[in-house]
Length: 54
Image (cartoon, rainbow, N blue to C red; front, side, top):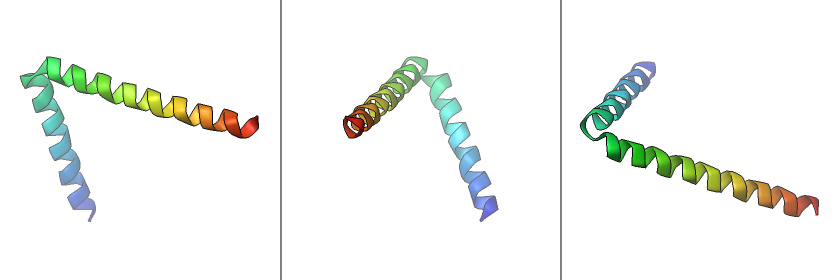
């Protein structure tokens, strides 16, 4: 099982590097979308916690 996880991780790394090398603009866009999603989720959690306190 550990061997399968290693192989999957290596494949993921190779895919990410391939994407960055072949299309850096698209890769940057995907990173931006990811960070926006994380930011939106964090804001939602913050609003939820604030509503619990009030």
